[in-house]
Image (tube, rainbow, N blue to C red; front, top):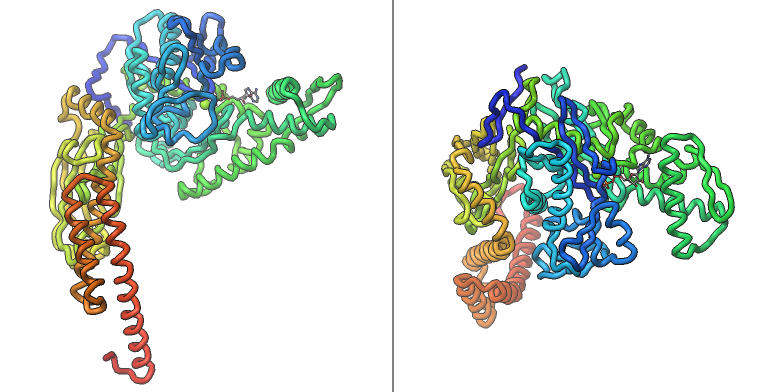
Length: 623
Ligand code: ADP
Ligand code: MG
């Protein structure tokens, strides 16, 4: 079967011209860079032969005195406020999203990405990540002695649009041309050549098990017709090698019969535990010297010590497999990623649950960067084996829903070909037609996006509002051609439209749509909330009017007046954009309409009961 070869839009792959591109794993605890050299993907070292750059940046008062990685480590103890670690956890997050503990002073409003207050001034997570990426870019330029044609940066599969956009911005700020953001598990699969499996006619499913220093991620990927699709992801944001170290410390305390450790002892114990754990990946038994005593630790004991942590990861694996609607037999390969998977006990546990030997021949700290480098090399047109390139949708695709809002079906950067299906329903009783308006862009309001086309689904059988089931399918083929179809599931009526998206956009327009989407994210969120509230309120008013035509006799004069007044007041506020007023008016209306609803319910229960009685006595269907 011929594999898809799709060039990145705007990128021709001229022959005979070697281009240099890099892959970067921008990690929570470590970052690194790799590139394909003489046909082989290799990690790049710094001047001191180090591959892993700890993702730590220390900002000093002098603007030019920034320390990175190992050089910044010592400041963690002496100057924690200005020494930023794990900045990845802050990327694309609003201040309100950040619920974990950290030693930093964050500035900015709750709904914005925060800035760190440092002695070198205010720094956004994007800038700090850019500083890390910049180091890696400099390293690559020095080692490769060639101008860079672009970079592939990896991101966790669960990263949302805002987190991806923040990563992209950081890379651009660091002077890198982003060829693509690649999911970390996909990169790991590419590193093992799982996209080159000889048996490509059949869909392949892979599990990527990533146990790092502080986080655990597991993803199920499907490789189908030249494209990796993420079927399901799961994990723990606070479960990793650090937890294994803590469990060993607990055991050590028991062995030495020590109840409490002072800070200095604790630091010492943690260090010994980490060293012991890492040594056990090579040796079967090791000795730990602490408090003037020697303690022996073997693999079997280590395994039992960390069993609770292992069990938690296995539990997540099983859940993710269920989410992907697969069983163990459906999994062709399991790939190990992250430093902690060097432990024999971890490999054993994974092998046992998936009933197969996991792939771990490539250094698990490096495998993601290696896969990114291979992809980068393909994207600049260097691969000779005619292998596939994956392409992605450059902008999000969605359709208009009530209130002029956009419902996104296919997010930007989704690998194509792709199909996404979602159910919609009718807004009014007896509605027999539905307008499907297809739009493209990152904004929440239709008016800010680009309209791609519209069509009408006719002949929907009349039903109560909300009952019809309209299935809308978006399909983007390998050439980026979009077709949208809508089908009412009970009657089977359908309609369809073909649209040529995105490539009709100039680079300038595309950039504008992206930039606007990013700049207006906050504003859009508020507008969306306003529009959704308005739609809900209108629905409420409509339902109430209906109910009143049937049951208004249940109300006395003053109840009627109150309800009428509340209705009119809400209708009036709906003409404004004051969300507080509208919410208030909804509350007031609710107060009166709840009373009415209770009366109606009583009446209908009475009716139903009397109906039963009659039916009990005779077979007559009359009430
Ligand atoms: P992250 O993905 O979070 O940046 P890494 O993948 O670099 O983290 O993993 C770091 C973790 O791997 C640490 O907890 C470290 O102790 C552990 N680790 C490193 N080498 C080994 C080894 N040889 N055996 C077991 N664990 C190891
Ligand atoms: Mg990692």
